[in-house]
Each structure stands twice: as C-alpha cells, then as structure tokens.
Image 1 (cartoon, rainbow, N blue to C red):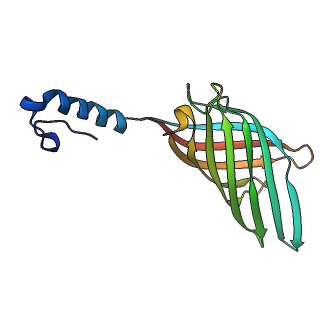
Image 2: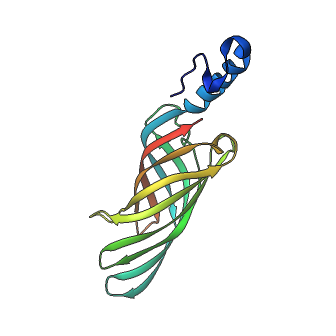
Image 3: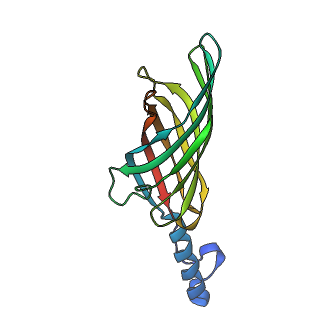
Length: 171
C-alpha cells in the first residue's frame, strides 16, 4: 500500500504539492493492479510423442494447440485465449518432472508467454503442476500471475482438457 502525506520522500507538500501529488498518484496506480482469482478450462488438441526408455521410465515430447479457454470469473483476461504449449516431461518410477512454455494470443491480439512445470500425475493420468506468466505484449507486458493446473489428454483422440486455477494481476 502507498501512503501519501506531508513530507512524502522528503517533499514538502506546501512547496511542491503538485509534484508530490503526482508521485502519490503514480505510486498508487502501480500498486493497485486488478487481481482476478478464478478457475478455468482450456480445450485443445495434443500431439505428444512418447519415448519409452524402460519399464516405468519414459520421456514425453509435449505439444498441445489450445483452441479456447473459458473462466468462471466475468471479464477474466485469459478468456478466449488460443495458442500452443510445448515442452518435455520425464516419468521415472512414478516420479514426474519437466516443464515448458505456452504462447497464448488473446481475442484483442495481445500475446502472453507462460512457463509450466510438471510435478505429478493424478490416478486418471492427468499431468499436474504449476504455471506462471513470464511476459507478453500489450496489456500482458506487465501482467503477473501464477497457479496450478491438471491437464488430461485422451490418448485415443488427442483431445486435451486443461483445468487451471490461479490469479492474474493486470496493472
């Protein structure tokens, strides 16, 4: 939180009131980003390649093209995003590790890069882990956000459903 009072950063309000007020407004604007916490679902087509190394040990080249994301919160900035996620995971004796990147485009044409990390797997085979915003264009240049995901791919059809939870801050 930003507090504005007489003597902010040593500036006397009577003498430099306009400058001090402008600094306070700018600082308050920077610190009051809209944070949205919500759950959502991405749907896409996975084109993964499995490389079997041994019993219970495999490497998977991951690539999913997402055709839509929908979120519970009205006006969520990720609603309508499309784009690819790619990377690699290793499964060895039930342990899951790996990660990659996603490059999404929102309905206005702004782009955002996200990192993902694979950390586990559910009983039904969904990969679980964390995601975080790492940069972008337009409104995504200064955005922050992170959360968790569970991504399940139908092995027969390649259809993927990615259930995400987390928060996004749009300064």
